[in-house]
Image 1 (cartoon, rainbow, N blue to C red):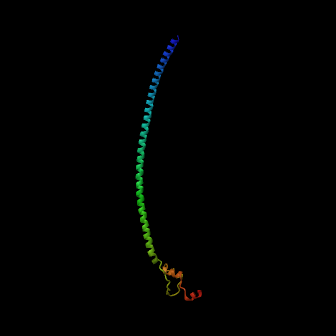
Image 2 (spheres, rainbow, N blue to C red):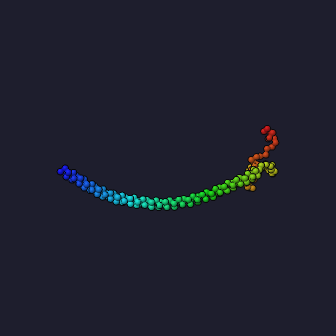
Image 3 (tube, rainbow, N blue to C red):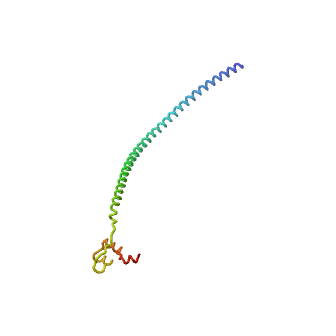
Length: 155
């Protein structure tokens, strides 16, 4: 009986091992199928991301080319404006030199020559019917001639 019990136990163990191997094979097949489906889903997702990245790269390349064109235009404008600024600085220097050369002639000393006239001449006569006085007349009014007697008194 003990041998029969051991035989039944061994047969049960073999039967249980066979069922376990079948379950492992079935579970392995399910896991391989699930793994394959997950790999396909990940592949599809990766493909979608790559397509999106390619579109994004296209947009960025277009934007980059537009910005490069604007940069080239801005550089050309900058060069043109620098040339114009240099030309204006040169013109300014030339005008300052010309002004400096003409300035001494414009600042000539005006002498108050004594005027000969008949009758009385004062500031009211200058603005009479003849019109406005000349620059020489105005200079003579601003710096009236000083007589030698007055110079001696001041000294």
